[in-house]
Image 1 (tube, rainbow, N blue to C red):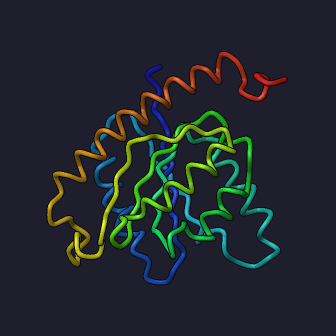
Image 2: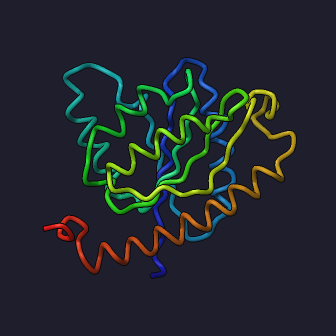
Length: 189
């Protein structure tokens, strides 16, 4: 399997002035160094708009989720949980998530978003997705990046991302081969 792997980065926040953009931009910079990877962005802000466009947006979102081989969810922690906009995005479709790996990059205050990630693991289990144990977490994230979005001490975060990406790619290849061999929906039929 030498074809490019498609990794979707999922934004977890829709707040005005969101810090999520800083984290996603750092992630993109790191992913651009990876060979054999195609990155697509899934942003719940793109789903907002007039009600008459909702069905079109959800259909387009389902296509994007369907074409991804793996996901990296970038989520903040709001009040010990993950944002409602992220839940709405995740719940917008069902089968396209099946048998695909999900990695997490979280950020927040003292917990670094880890409580949000623990809740998301339960949600993705119901979608038959495989969540990775390894993740990247930014405690007190706002103090870790300069005004331009560069980490003051990048080595630790980069090391954690490297491990997560290796495992995400491994799971993506394994699950893609399994889905090709036998459609996941047929397993319980």
